[in-house]
Amino acid sequence: MASINAVKKAVMLSPTVRTLPSGVPVAPFINLAARAPASAHDHGHGHGSSVRSDLPAKFVGGVSRSPVSGLVSKTLVTAPTTTFFQPRTLHTSAATKEPAVPDFSSYRASNTSSNRAVSYFMVGSLGLLSASVAKSSVTEFLTTMAASADVLALAKVEVDLNTIPEGKNVIIKWRGKPVFIRHRTQAEIEEARSADWKTFRDPQSDEERAKKPEWLVMLGVCTHLGCVPIGEAGDYGGWFCPCHGSHYDISGRARKGPAPLNLEVPVHDFNDAEGKLVIG
Amino acid sequence: MAFANTFYNTIVKRNSVFVSTIFVGAFAFGIGFDMGVTAFYDRWNQGKQWKDIRHKYVEAE
Image (tube, rainbow over all chains, first blue to last red):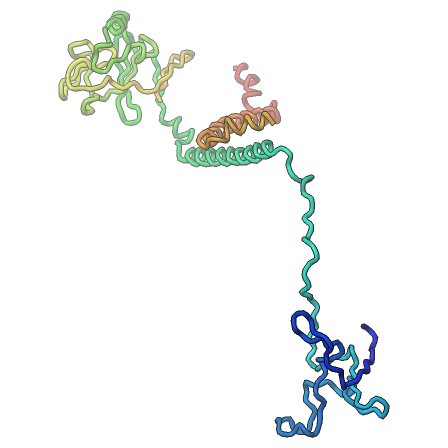
């Protein structure tokens, strides 16, 4: 169809000789694209004598008179029939068969359970790493609020134990509170250990309270209302609180009076090499 | 495959078990990571740290 074909055919067409089953007459040679030619008789249509713009130009074809054939309509097949050119690059003809789907079977996992396990393992690993990152972030942040090493060192008190004779009390100040240090005699140790501590108000054995039996270290604050008890006094040979009459025994345990708890034992350590006690 | 199924059925299937496994694993991982990094640091700086050279100075006193 690339070449220009001049189609000559008679205008005086024979009537249709047959019809399609649908009832449409078969008229194979009618060129429905041919339009009425421009003529001088077009007055009254508002176009004047000029050629209609939507008509094909003269060179495209048209109706002419031939001495041999009479009236002849000549149409160049490939010429545009009008000046409106509408390319129809898409066709609507139906596909002859279904589009073939590629075969993906070689890409499919033959064993989905291992894929599932790997996926969940990856999810779990990421969760594990995130959790440990979050945990260390929080702990590191909280560590910044803790007391630094120099502050902790200042909060300690060293006591030279060699200067405390047996059977004597020493009261020192530690973090603003009095601390009792008692160098107990052997009789006092036996008395403290032999007591039936399970029946006391705040049951606590003497072994729990004194790291070394001859040294008793505890906060000198009455557990009742915070007075400072008096040493070597009271019914049990230990401490006596003058405010409300609480009695503590030689291990500092509440035995009588309103005190609900034993005297508190602070964190302390013995430095045996230098004979010193470190409180804090 | 058997291992994968065992892993899925014992750990992953119940979310409470999965999450608690993650947390316990994170705890263990943190400890192991700290220990590993410390061991590497000590080996990398062998002979330079105070604990490595302390005996040279403290014993002499």
